[in-house]
Image (cartoon, rainbow, N blue to C red; front, top):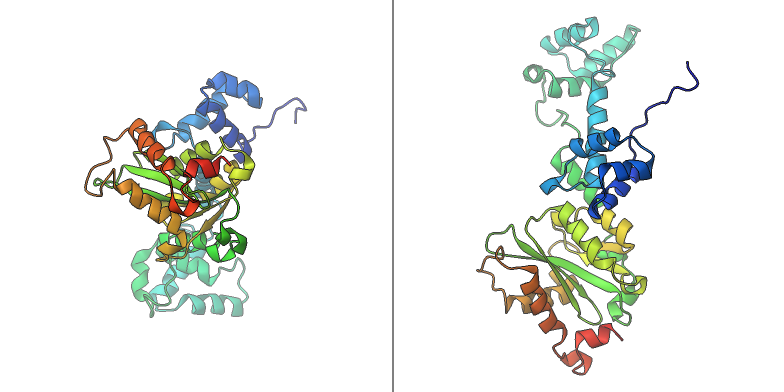
Length: 325
């Protein structure tokens, strides 16, 4: 092999996050390629393949899509039960004789057959390639294997890796230090347009952003952009509810350097500061009015009113005064 031959390497996750940052500040494809030491066509192809929601490039989404694409491309190569092979015909024949997958595999092992197949592979073959053979199974529902990657299993994995509010340090409950936040969204009449709100627990100061599409990607980007402006001491933790709009919490942790916790389902009082402040917003934006026509400038005006209004719990100081020390 020629020593001078250059091997192509796929764009990795770290490079994708750099691309996202460069695109946010308006860099051209050639500028990004020069910064990463890549060919401009490589960057252009990456942006075309993963356009993201609303035309914006998302490193997190691009990485997930690339992994799924590679897995899909390799499925057939590593498949044991390929159409037309002797092994596949043998399995199909035994299934039609009402043999269970366990019996097929057990008999092949007993006979010492080469190129054995597993029980899981046969169930997967029935689910993905030959659902018509399901009728030959004795237990067609209970024992039947579900496909991996279903929404239910994805949701289980999602909840398994999150930090529960029960893991949050008890000192945060005392509200003695600044930098601990609670977050949620305020819905409008049309459900799509919302306000993304963050309230600091000690001071009660409110941040609010208008979002016209309630996606995890947009919520994550808005959150990171908002908190990057603050010094580290004022962005320690944030506690959310269980809405899917906060499912990109790993990006929030990585880019904002805050630790994300989640309240328990149906325990809205665990984010009482945020719930109360959202109620204050409703004085200006009642539930029945659409939020689509509300501008960020109008929202900022209301937020300024709330943050400069005296609070009894602060000895009638304002949230802004407590927050700024």
